[in-house]
Length: 103
Length: 267
Image 1 (cartoon, rainbow over the protein chains, first blue to last red):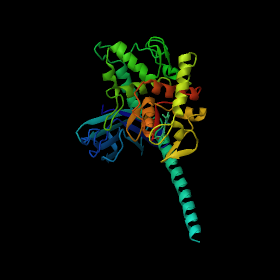
Image 2: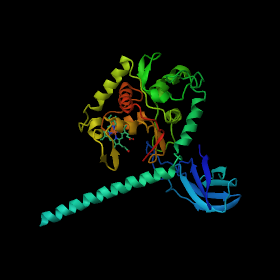
Image 3: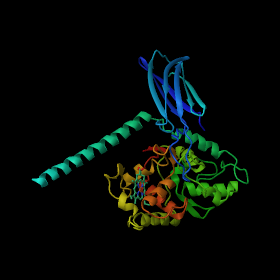
Image 4: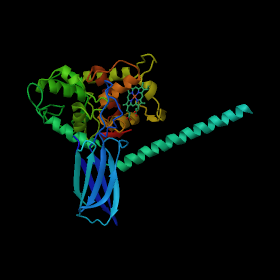
């Protein structure tokens, strides 16, 4: 059920706080299942946060990030009502996206 | 002289260990605070809702009419009254036993099918049972734990649970009480509560089922019982078995009155 993002953006005075929780297994590729078979790597590689279409954060992630990762960032220049989006792409080319309005 | 050095060394070591433990707990509390409402269990709750309304089994029926004790399909608050006696089944059931009953009765599924893999193994993203448990317990949020003890069967379950809690067995001669009878003690870095006290049982019982960060899945209270019996070096606990129901009844009754805050967030 990869793909889901729960995202919230809140204006805190002169900056906007974005919190995003992503549904993703974040498999390192180094683990074995109960039967001893390797579990294939499956993790988010890139995460982008945009504010009204402009990139405010772009990150490269790897296998060391936890399952169902939580991202918290702050940026300046936002205002209540503006749209904020979070998009990720993983090593299998799958993507996830979530949008919200700044509250 | 040599003795003094060794003594002060061990003293320093224990102070250090205490500091490390404090720091660890602090970090975890900080983490919990930072996560706020962002417990990854929110995804699992949604998945549980999908399972609840999805036709399954030979009868291609949903669980929507499953009676968790407050009437067919009534979910709000239902978890808080479990374990309880069910007339139609003729026995006391915990959530997992009851879900199994509904899967068999409503959906026509077999016991083998339901018990094949109730809990996630390494690499799994969650099971139907885990998702249903998260979905159902969420609808008893802030409801006081109120297991019925009106019927003799329910009181007998509590008595059995208490007996099991103190029953020493296995290669190390452990009982639950060996690890869980004193407050303020810990194993590895885990603080262990006194589950025989209201306060200790309440803290534990109201926070399960829970999302376990170390495993990336929601674990049920039945799983918690099974994993502790494993730590006790006893045979694998069967989901929904009288032993599982008894232990949960014991904890629920000890915790009675405390408000549920599950799914919780565990290390």
